[in-house]
Image (cartoon, rainbow, N blue to C red; front, side):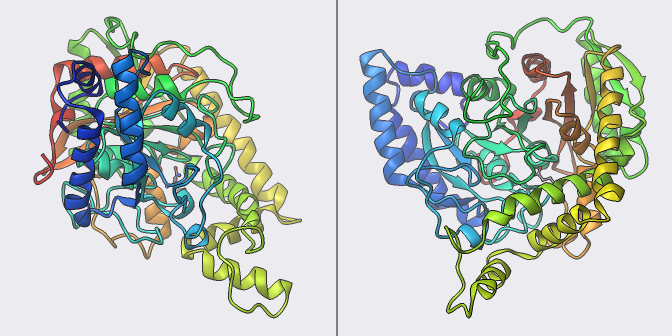
Length: 484
Ligand code: GLN
């Protein structure tokens, strides 16, 4: 059952080949049996999942079921869920149960999806390896000694290991695409503002965007159809029509103009990853696409710019975790200052503390112009590079990450080496553009991702371009051994 597409599952639920209760039990059993090896879930919500599955079965029987009725999914533990703990991977929120659902959660529930549980993640979505979680690292299902990528590593590992049909994720600098690449699945980060951020715990508000991790572009389209759209509760939500993503999947791609940024194929890229990405691009040429080299001259500045902008925004967003209103509170505070200091020192891990300190520094009087304002200016130049590129090409392609999954612990002592994992994904967030990662030919049994970047609100095109590739290749179908 776990290898079927979402469309197949939906059809079989309607044919009563199996019920949603049976399908949900099947996934819960897989989680109980297999997740010990992965640690991809922080919370499993068996009772509420089975209750939702029963409701879905009744809705299907009465003929008024939503498009995702009875499909078991998981949410990254950054989305608020009424009644299920929302930890954001942090000790700070280990005791937090939100009183409401995030918009994305609400919309998927309204479409009938069943929530199996909440997935592990880097603390407050800060990381590229899922090793900063308070709940311990997630293991890559393709090789348990390696990282799944981050910060949506729990979602990526759970989907790759077929512990849920699909999962939500968030991407601030690459956190959907990079773990999708390292786990051999399909991930899409929509345009900034396409999916509501309401109820999604904020890391860097001008960069954060919700999206999907799934086994195929077709499956991702099924979820995005429900998640995308204007939300008056999020002031940065885009009031732009949402096309039907599933409808556009099969559109012809003959004549598609693909741009290959020369900056994405230079130093630092593992040559075997490069070869696999180049082979995928040749496949696109066989499908009728035209390839052209382009330049994104300011893209080498994207990592340094991001590590000014993201920490600045995080230092401000995370100020709300003060031990007073909710979250972790230290024992026996001497006075208010002691309460703040100790609650935050105990509640936040090392990476979060590092970011809060960097952010506070770059925003402080005397340094604001030199760092924050300067970074914002370069951010504009990076976005302008894309605007210029999209005058000549329809999509931009390149590697998602410079290497395949690395070993657990390999980069934990070197934050800069860790930050460089996102060298190809961060510029997209700085510009607010949509990006995807799809699996291409593995290297030494480890997955490799092809990144596809589109112009603003071109999610339908991205999913279409990804789907046509998946129609003629089988890389997205491979299951890690032991999880078939
Ligand atoms: N790896 C990047 C970081 O650590 C991006 C994380 C993300 O996209 N949430 O900030």
